[in-house]
Figure 1 (cartoon, rainbow, N blue to C red):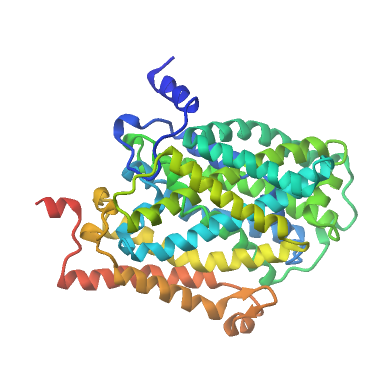
Figure 2 (tube, rainbow, N blue to C red; figure 1 turned 135 degrees about the vertical axis):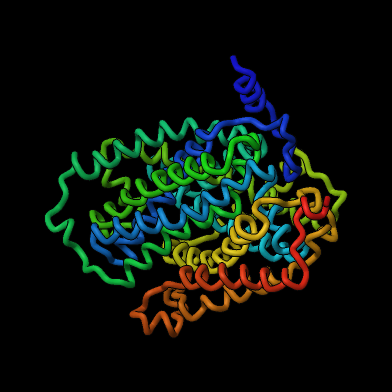
Length: 473
């Protein structure tokens, strides 16, 4: 057995002790392939199928438009996700800790709070849809019992930590991949496709852009935590291999189950996606739903793990001497699970529309952050940060507030508002003039990226932005 393999086996068999601390080089392990399996294996789940079904049910698009929107949205959004993934081996810290280098120690707190809410939102959504699907094939559990079961498994994996989650994802890559292929065959080959399947509904620009939007936010939503799962990779891994493995893993792993969801939405448009999946795969539905339900526990463990790291990050900002280890991670994760279970068990029916609204709000809050983060990392500082300053109360050389970053972030949120459509609750005036088409995330990226870059460059003419090498000199 190689030294690296031995280290991996030992890590899987023991609880991870680190939380948000930098990972020393002698504790780094893993390969680029781990980036493919964790993002491929954990994307094949019931929530991805529900998200794909939005294209043909809620947005009412025909098969070819739905498929095109799903592919375009995922391939576009995955660019940003994978760029964040490539940051992990370089800095060795969780993504939201690194955000202090762009927004300042206190300026980053707002972003981290929003991200904690995002993790809880996804965690609750997965509990609801996963519990519903598991209860449909194991009725003795009941939906509430299934929700509690998934929450318990997710908590156990979070307590165990990083390497167990990676190992879980490697197994699910093969198991979920095979079952997904079987689901396609059963839904569209074994069971005959009804006449007019490919011509149902009429294509609209609004529906297409909405499909692109929810697919893109699926990927961009990973951005605040994707480097949490690459921070243990050796620094010599390199940015390009980490980027491409993450990119194709998450793209393929998301597109396939979303296409299944879109097709099922056309087969059974009057059923909710979970019931439709069970009906469309009749004969193997127990296997399909059971495997995808196990898959959601892996994904929810990732949400909970990173939500816990973010909560620790907030605490450490105000109490720099606070050093959280495995015990603190377990206690905080347990508290977050209890909160999520209370909400998930109280949620009523018709959650799909609520979930879509959540995705819209999430996209609006994440786009300006990802623009600032990537411009700062790749174009301003070129990945050169003083990691030790992330853990100082005053932010070290990054200060308590980096007002250019904070201002650009807030501007990025405001400029998107006129372009947004949030279900039936709000339609921006420009979105209405564009035929009820939501292009807010495109506007956010187009405005914030150059705005932050040129603002920093203008300020640098007065006072250069210091990076570690310059400070040492």
